[in-house]
Image (tube, rainbow, N blue to C red):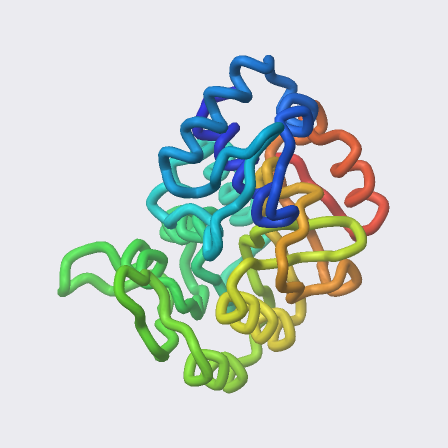
Length: 260
């Protein structure tokens, strides 16, 4: 397992538990004590957490890594998930996309389709979908939701964004959660991201979750979709080997789970 993948998984545990023991890192990731120690040192150096006797404690305000970091982690798996999602869509549909790293890659894959109406609060997704010369005609209609921006943000957010979502009805919401767990459902870390995902879920006929294996069994602090609201979960093919118990529980709880 690459270090970027390990660090992403440890950060997910910190988001859920606030503190993680060295023993849990060893067990969850299947790594040696020396590897766990190196990862703990690296996360402290990144300012994500503080080393304590026996493990790590999350620093106040530490959450998901930035989008540019998340996009580089398990990129191959996320592209496979995106391609599997494309297979579930067809011309004429209206779809929501949130601002997750996997849905940003999905936006790139959607350029191979035509006739979709794609509604998103992600600047990166909107830019990916509208690539081309100014004189070109887009193969899909792209609607970028308005709202508030913050320094460094690559998404719109806030009451304006949520209000705009409620103006639309979509066939499918394609969302990338921080965590997906059999009892807790889909969760996010930030309240503003959960509010957007919740609104998209409510305004869509189907909810497809795109989640690599590091998100399986993870519960973050804001739920936005109960398991009963999920139509389909698409994860990567290594999930069965690395997170078998979490995958089995999700397979029992959700109508359909696909390994890409």
